[in-house]
Length: 552
Image (cartoon, rainbow, N blue to C red):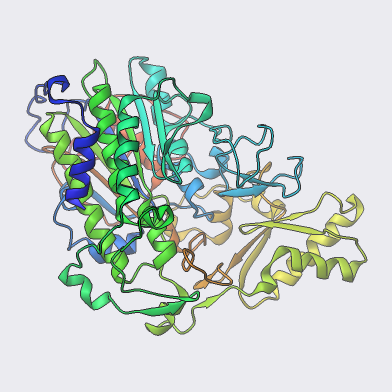
């Protein structure tokens, strides 16, 4: 993978004659504590589905980029503290400092019965106002993000700031980049695209070069990637979803874009484009501080398609480590003074079938009986109400607008009663119960289920009833190719993620106690002297000594 990344970087880099000169190194900081000179470039990385458990499993195996980041400040027990542990809500917390209840991003998708289309499902990164849009074929947009990101705050404080967002998913790029990025690019099927509202003519040369390079890579078959020695014990085939997986090495046929996406190659392409953007735009060389947000999405795609405990994820972890290492080495070669933050949008745990074989016989798939439509049909028959009665998206259950107002309370009470009677259901909270719950002020691992639900509740977008399944019950009813494992529960295996900060000459320390991803934005803001207020998160002191980096 390192060779692949190097090839992509060389392809996307400027010709030698046009390359920028290295900038002068930053002044030497104090011998202990956090550097006092403001960094010229913030690199904010989200590794999709990089759970705290996965980090713990492989952290002693990392030898490159992720090993370097462990020489900074490490919070191994970071929390996406809300209940809706999905990609869009998680990414919305990382650089806003706000929980989904305030970002408005309560799920990957939700029901909006005013949307004026048959399915009524709205995707978090679409603009449903666009003609012909639906949650599958949509116009990407930042329309639903209700708050500013760190990049937005930085540009408001200093218009000279440049903000770039690059990711393997549109929702990652949008939720981390925000409303005022200078450039935003994300992977779509077989090439990088941007928001229609921010399209530029012509397309930046670096994007054209990257798309050409990745297009050639995609058009050729992919031979098996090397299997590290420590991965061999994990290479055990298992049958699931009509296929056998678990011992693969990412072989891919020419032109297979879906398998390319669920492989280390996607991360290589994303980081190569990010490096090209830094070089072409001379990020980190201006008068102030610039920011680049990078969404590394392959770990999530690999997890969904192949699980977390086979040879495939083991290879992915090694390749990601090397890819990040090559990226950071390139920034070093350019002499940039940069600060890195790395975290994840949510966690996950392995697929049911393999868990059952490995000391977890209680693992199970959700029963079809939990489906909101089926529950609604039963309620309609019992109460004499013509359907539809209930609509469902993720764990949110909505009472259909067609249900008469006078019958809605009875429908809600019956729905809650029926769900709580199901053996796989841990809790069912009405919107009134959630809205009446104060926001938690205690460490996130102590939160009740109701407090976790409150952190991702929005009166306009959340359902009339939130149904939470018991631990170790996956929402996947029937596994299938590219979908054998998932996340989205309120349990800590989906909530816990690592949070790492690194900068040259930073004094390293590790804090095992819990912090939250909403703490990231105020912490980064403090390192560049940017005042922020009114956020859900708090500034984390990155100074290992008596000084306080939050007070600078």
